[in-house]
Image (cartoon, rainbow, N blue to C red; front, top):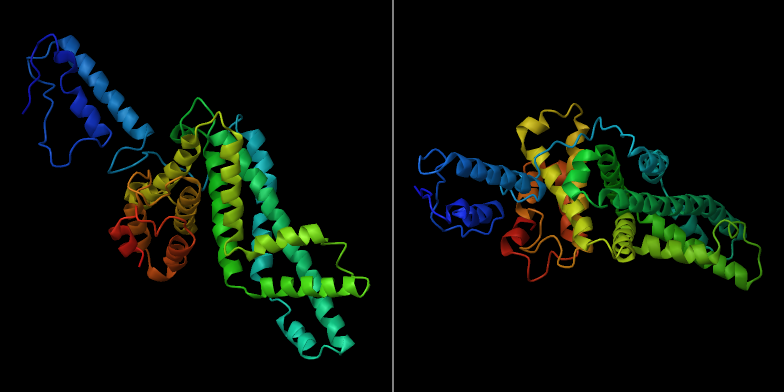
Length: 379
């Protein structure tokens, strides 16, 4: 036991070690120590001062996510969060976008493509009826692809509005997420939508096949001066942008990543940490809620667990793309081992897609700075 003696230096004795513990700077092999707040060697005024420092340390520990065991210690109500008066302006703007998200996913899920018609047209290039049939099948599908692409642009605008609200001074990212839970919920819903969209897109090769056929046929029609029915809907400039969008393995995630990077570069007066800490804190909150029975028992909907898992993975991937050294480095503010463990504690069939997202859509997993243990956990 270490007792603090009454001396001219006693009021700050032990504070260095206490701060080291609270900020993870203490050597893990160092001897444990005990601050004896009950000893008579402390005067009442010194006792009050030390207890104040201890409480302040606990507050800092929560606000800066340095508690190794728990992380941010609050419950983010993804099921019932409602906007406060100060949130309503941004919330209403984003809500206009999000109300169309489910319809986009339903359209994408039901997207069957024109593979049969295209194959027939290619195999019989001189059969005008088959050419017309293929073109007639592809044009409305390209209209759908245009709608998906335009939605990505609306989603990008919504995300940037949320980032502006959740990273502004004077509050820390943790304080923002705790105070503005309706906006945090919308941020989570954008990430949840993004991963679902990209999962569906990755498993549907018809999207790129249809669009490639559309562009080839349109080019041939222009050369032959044949009027093209679908050209007015998707002009050449838009077609180029759509082509780049659908060429990405995870187009929605790329859109959000680029939007976040652009947000950081356009707001030079805002430290990049405000944005990356917002992402890392969201990942930590999701992890803590999933691994803490007290929090998890508050979910009233079974879908909330998969929602939290998807959001956790989404913010990890986004953080890994935006942060200079990524999510897997030792200096990362995301507990990657803890997050992967939470995923692996779920029924395997329910999370394989999310584990694959970490394996194949992150940027820094294979860097030398990533520990062998993390790489092994994701093998």
